[in-house]
Length: 291
Image 1 (tube, rainbow, N blue to C red):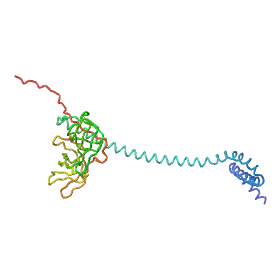
Image 2 (spheres, rainbow, N blue to C red; image 1 turned 135 degrees about the horizontal axis):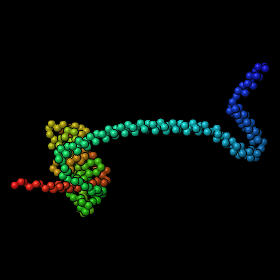
Image 3 (cartoon, helix red, strand yellow; image 1 turned 60 degrees about the horizontal axis):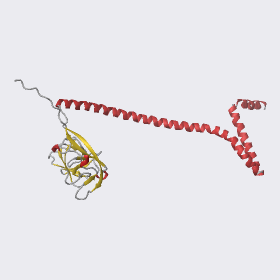
Image 4 (cartoon, rainbow, N blue to C red; image 1 turned 180 degrees about the vertical axis):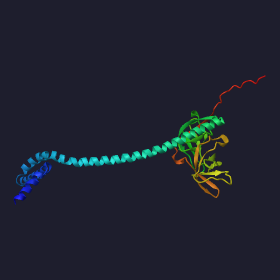
């Protein structure tokens, strides 16, 4: 018996102050709960008077006990944020590497283009300017595809000017008044535009047929055009500047090549008419021939 009492006292001494405090708090909370039950049975008025002070006294302790869980929640949120930032950083590094590769390619192409221009003694024979206007009316029907713009000759609009938007070639001006002008869309049956494919370099004419696609005319019998090729204006005939995006080949069947235009006729809002102005060559005096 004496040895057991010694072990109990030794165990009590071995308890840490934190454990002792926790056990004492538990005992006090039990006693307080019993006291509140007794008071609530005997005197409801006294219970109401004591409930508020007890709640106020217990609030700091409850706040102290809740801090560890709050700290765990904050730590968990910080870890999740750190993980997301790390993943985003990895994605940005990968995107930056791809951009650096494209920058190197662009720099090489720019240098090559400059060298070829110098070798060919190339100089631009025209400069382009633009007039932007809003589409205010769409008179497209079964027999024609045209739109009306809120800009006319007072802003430089003229018949025959190519019209583009952010997607590519839209059409050409066919009528120009003082304050308005009418544009014939590429999809109109009367529309014809010289084009060239960007890969096979096949030249042809993109013709409208009042449908959602264009057809390529006058292709060679041994044409090597493939589905997915992109088309741009060729500049042939000097009617439309070369290099304007037109569309993409979507089908080839029985020699008929269909092209889906880049411009969406149903979402035309603002468009730009292209003004072409000749660039004057600088005058260079030639030395007189020796007599």
